[in-house]
Image: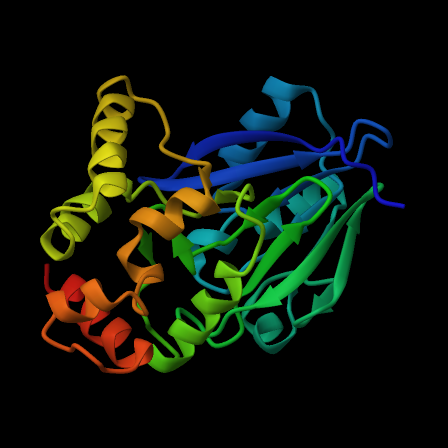
Length: 258
């Protein structure tokens, strides 16, 4: 049975990326979620005293994979990547698809495929610890830009993630929350949960603190991209009675030009 004692260590990389280490104290195994740059991961390992055993890759974009080759050469760690994107990712040892399980020591993650940002992006959900590593699919008060997939695919992907437990903690790939809040308020200016989050985010950023992890229950109340099936959101974008996918498509298009 999977242990429920995962430890996490969040750190910044590049300009606005986040890296995360996930550690199993029982076995000493440690996974990096993506590897934006080797130096930042090395600094995080040094700060924690943990030994890198695995890299779990969410998607193929260079700002998530740039450090893999160097870290693999130094640590001999296992690299796990989305099956359909493995050809675009360096040094892959193991590939995964939707519904597969990945172990990091005694910790177990379920793989959730979420096409949209890229066609094969994988989210890693550790059910015993209620931890979701969402890459660039779901952000705090936002979602990834639809680059390779369609808006309909992205909505279906987000709808999958919405079904996770409300107390799931969400780690995403970038610090975009302040900008996301500013946009979301153009759609739902009277959303009390969103206004509360806006105040919290302003305080955190003023103190130079991260706005993640966020919590799924709070995202469902404040993240407009998860609320495309809420009648008030549809009405706000002039699409009362339209399908959630159509509402999501309009909201995402507005964010692209915001």
